Length: 274
Image 1: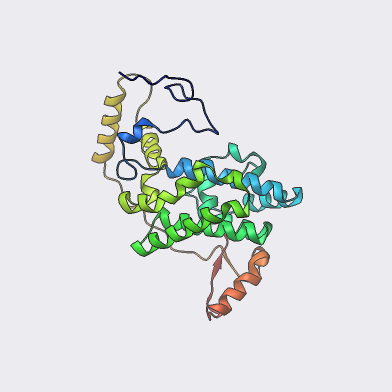
Image 2: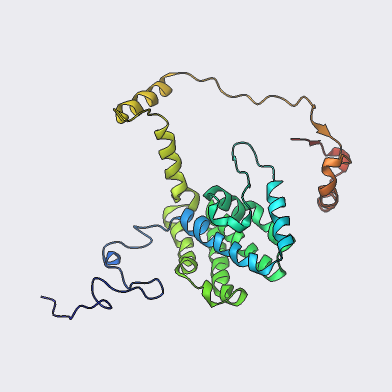
């Protein structure tokens, strides 16, 4: 019989100390990372990325915030991604996972470089690159490099911001490279993947009766019916534009510089208006 005097500080109803209630008995049953994974969707997209944006807002003026919102709203994304930045960064908590994921993996770096201080921008570049490598690594070398980046990012985070950023959500990033080694890319172990599957299955049922039968029936029908392959149509040069077109004006200088770097003739480059 346990003779330990149980109080709120050492018993089953332990009080929270800075959000931590002590060692979990579940850790005696489950082992990380062989049996458990940190969910990339919640850890990165819903927790850490919004926290970074909130800190950036305090370091820039209102005009910069408006410019960032305008820049994100002007972004043109391939139609199969269906991501539109309508909400301002002042209400970042209201954004969906797809907005944060796209920001971390793709559009966040140019925004930070343009409007944040060199310290904040360079620090986020390290984070973004590490997440891109772990999101879908092509080799073991990329995972090793991502681990080095994550270690540097977490080590320097309190120096870039302050000690209040040293939360468990930051520490958990240190385990992601090992998790990717054991279970594969973050893109395939995220809750995004499973929720997408759930949404797909949910659309197969209508109403509230015989749900399993409905789902099985419509999936069976879908497998039986022969679908014609999708053929990409050839370009009709309808939307072809010249590099001197006004639409290209905001990007012309960058394009010309890149063409020079890669030794490409501007006359060999064909642009199309989306």
